[in-house]
Length: 270
Length: 293
Ligand SMILES: Nc1ncnc2c1ncn2[C@@H]1O[C@H](COP(=O)(O)OP(=O)(O)OP(=O)(O)O)[C@@H](O)[C@H]1O
Ligand SMILES: [Mg+2]
Image 1 (cartoon, rainbow over the protein chains, first blue to last red):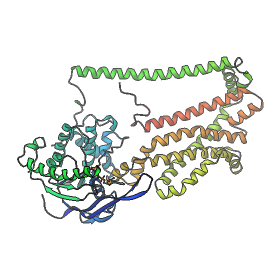
Image 2: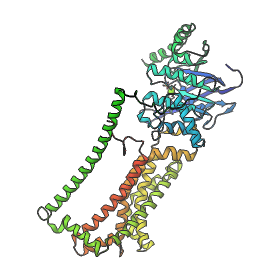
Image 3: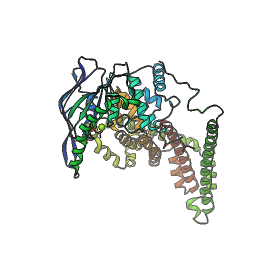
Image 4: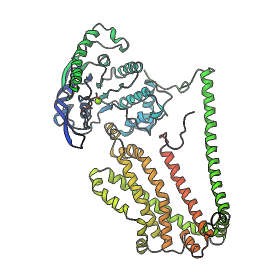
């Protein structure tokens, strides 16, 4: 892990939202509390934690979609106060534009940034080929399979080479095989680029296979409970990650710590 | 390593295989289905039209007094007569100009103001009740006023048609803009979309189903505006012809005028539909996409 000044920093970050009760009464709820975190350039960091613990909320604040209620988010040392266009954001839903074909979706950010058409077609063709979507360039999103849509959303984010890539459960709804293949593709696309990735997942194996560090959130209202360094070397073989000698012990420890949070949520629900 | 798409092997099956044969058969079947689809639509429309005409032709004078409803053969005769001696085309040219010009002015103004109003939340909240208020007054009642302001020439009729169109397009545009999923705005902003990009590449396409619906509803409204203007005062236009025919108790003449207007409205509506289908070709619920084979 390269040392130096962090690219992303969260300092005592709290975020509250207004929620509505049955009778339309409004009340505030806490989505995230007291978050402190520093992410270095080139790091691959995963967030894991129970549902509703504020993982997406923290990503949204890094992207500048909204601001912390208290504390601050720093990007390259400066507070994020508006939309941060240096980040690429692969959201929990794929949010492809339904009126654009796969190619036009992949190119959209380059188009926003004013790249000439010929150049952007060339770049898009390369990325589309990289993730094996050749032949589907002119399909609309509703004509693609779930895995294809995810690939499309992935290269749409990577193609403009943002410094920071935020990924919110990007492979969540996929079948196990496609998932592992996409994890492998992601690592290959990322390897050697020096880009920083912040990755949210509920899959501990996925988090271990991909990340340098894992951030565990406590149950809602979430706070950062613990940060782990993944004891595996790179390059990783995602297909046989279980076979790594350090894997079982690390997985057990992570699972034990996470289970505490989940069971307490369930106990509270009763 | 550089990646490119080899366009030869895309989604194909191995040359000469069963899979490729099935692909080819599917393509042929799809073409045939499309032609059948189009033919069935045309035949259905022709039969329904013919049926209505026959019912009218035979029912008139037997089921209903012919004086009140005339009959298609008489109307066609009358259309023909008007075409040659009364200059139906000459009069239509004014009505069409009024309706079309009013429509174009009203629709562009409606679209433009829709974008200006709906994109700024505070502005929207301020003007919203006023828009509904203005929309609520029977706009047709403005016609005499407009004739007072703009004279009895075509400009007063254009104004009435424009007002009829404006509010419908405005309200639909606003509804469309407000229906854009907020996540689409967020992700595209993060990708660096400018305000211009957001409007043209995200909001407009997302809102097109609403906007096109408004544009379609507004077509006959523009025509109503033009005709009512002509009814009130004019010496030209199809409205004037219809007025005259009614003064002479000339039912076939009346229907001939109505028939001519219907054709014009159908043509205008067809134009909007073509544009709409083009804009919404991405949407499986619209236009030229069929169920897969
Ligand atoms: N825009 C909003 N308005 C109101 N409440 C919100 C909003 N966004 C998030 N919340 C609330 O904040 C809390 C944290 O939400 P968040 O989406 O960050 O969870 P998460 O950790 O990403 O969960 P999951 O793993 O299920 O995606 C939840 O209780 C959620 O209801
Ligand atoms: Mg989430």
